[in-house]
Length: 346
Image (cartoon, rainbow, N blue to C red; front, side, top):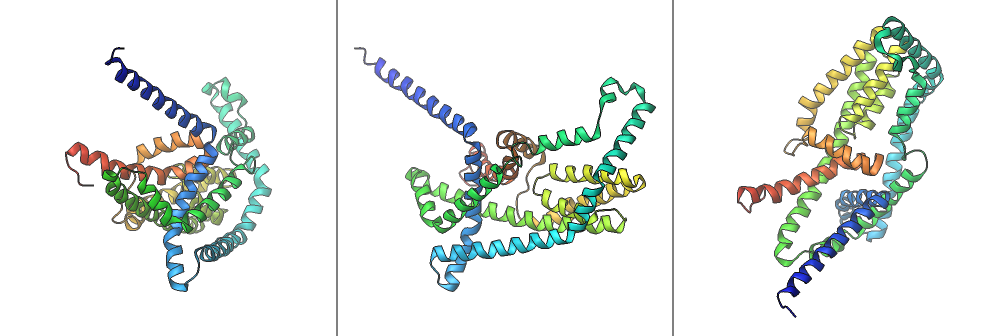
């Protein structure tokens, strides 16, 4: 037998095995994307909760399981109370908007028909334009596969359970993860894991702060200019602010259309409030809350959100920014020093 052919055969077999493994992983990512996204979100939740759980245990000398249960109860009471308070504050505006929605849709349809009659050159395609059908179509595409069933709620509940288990056993998981790397790479892996956990916690804290501030400022600004549903739009600004760029665009379009149907003269004021608050956010709020932290470049983040959102739906969009921050950190720590010919992390 030709001895030189044996290494080549082994190499070919190894390549085939690698390709099969990669193919299986890709198939799993697409076939089990809801489970994968839940798992990733759960690990993120566990990373956020782990320091809080450790401090809680150290202060009150409680077992891990008991400490985790107490934190869950506190979180449920805190978020439940906050959610109930916000709902109580915006309930009247939500009910009024719901009651007026047929009138708003009819008014917008009349405006659209007037534009088509005034500018017939727009085309035959616009002749069949229907505001109600378009709104339902767009809304269905935005929330397709997310709110149509309980799948997203179940995925988030599953993620929260994974997060709790991750937080309770964070030290053992951390040690096991490092042992999966060769001994020569463990030090660098440990540096990245610590930096990644810090990056994730900083991003989450800064995001919550930014959401609260920008939502409050938007609500106050809309109230000053006399816009209907000012509190509801401020709340939507805060909640959808977790989706960079896209979230605020949805609120601006919605607020502008609702105001256009009821009081067209106030639409410039609505747009002006959002422009002003976004300028404050970009030039004052974010530099303060993100002080000393790397900002995420807009264009790569939007492209990454599109890719992950296409793969994982609304859950993918929600987890895209922190995941992009971790990938950016890996790029800065491993790729850039290699290109620069240095072993030092950036």
